[in-house]
Amino acid sequence: MTIEEDQARFLRCIGEPTRLGILKLLAEGEKCVGEIASVLNKEQSLISHHLRALKECNIVKDEQEAQKVYYKLTDVRLARLIIDSEALMKELSLCKCQEVNYGREENQRSGEGQICPTS
Image (cartoon, rainbow, N blue to C red; front, side, top):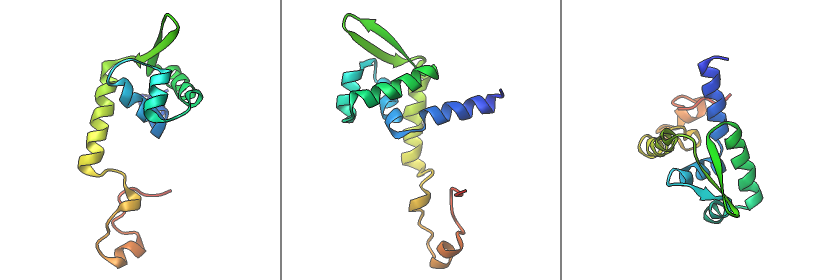
């Protein structure tokens, strides 16, 4: 497998809104499933499902403490990635194909000026 294939697999693993929300919370520090579910307003079973997938990709790890299992990022650089990607989205308006302001109606009809090609 090439590094590009590994990167693509990694990005597919984190490229889901609930998983990004989980990673954003874990960038602040370790959390248990209940805390994550509460903050994201999602069912614990759904959060557990996503945490399992993130764990399989070695993005998060768990630690048993008494009755609770706490999750945290496997590497602090992952926190930086999540924070930086959010900043990039806000500052550069990346990948907002549906919201592109074409400026001229004829460009919109032709697709000219489209930022992210749809395939």
